[in-house]
Length: 328
Ligand SMILES: [Fe+2]
Ligand SMILES: [Fe+2]
Image 1 (cartoon, helix red, strand yellow):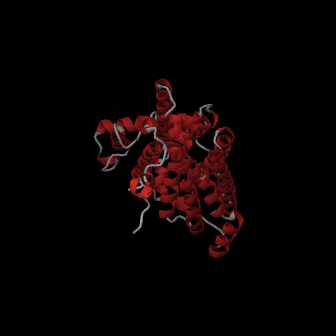
Image 2 (image 1 turned 45 degrees about the vertical axis):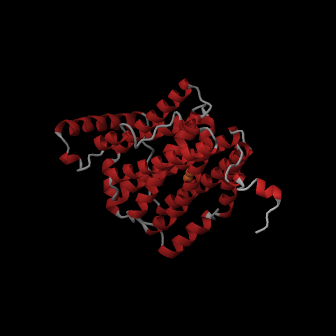
Image 3 (image 1 turned 90 degrees about the vertical axis):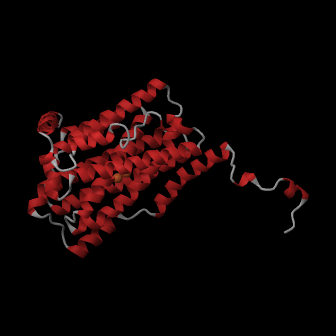
């Protein structure tokens, strides 16, 4: 192999693995822009997909014993999609980088489709859609109305999207109704992409936070998780009615959130901001996270839990049910 004198002098070409910080930052922005282009390539025609599925399986009908629980869950997903639409449109307006704006705009386009397809599916079911519980309503409103871009991204991209992904997956596995079972994977694919926006964009925002701002972001996350857990407690019986085991649902959600935080850390290293890029974000699978999981969802089932724990959970659940009605 013939090398020029200059090539010899500079061999091995370290630059192949040592991109400059500026190049790495540009590469990250390229990836964000790619979310937009992939979103465009994979955009599905919601009207066509739903019409084809109904033609294939006939009009959707829920099994009588699962109807109440399934409708309650679908109502949460429906209004969650509307909130996600508004939040991603807001992100698109407020984020500074063009590439991030493109990714958020693509998400808004997806969320609009998710909302109208679910609305049309519910219309095809022909059943009245129950109102959203007050705690879920409060959670979505908190994320919708916060002025902080960081809080918005943590609430939506990290918490709500991962929770929605877990519910989509669980509803699919429970095989409640064939049209829904074939429809939800379309949602899942899009939601997985939406998580990417938070993973890639949050580190650069978090790295700039002061200590007090990072603490406020952590408090916001904890308050959202508290609302989610409380809302979950109010729906425990309905989850089971539909065939979803609450502990499995929570475990899967935490697994997704753990992966998101790891990916964020990797992204932060890529952007040369290191651990500063995840400050203010708590990994729910670390610290007291697993103990909270075991407390709320005892591994051997509620019946096998000690009396004090059953009592505490019962009190929490009753309080949550009262709040759920009061805030509705
Ligand atoms: Fe969505
Ligand atoms: Fe989404």
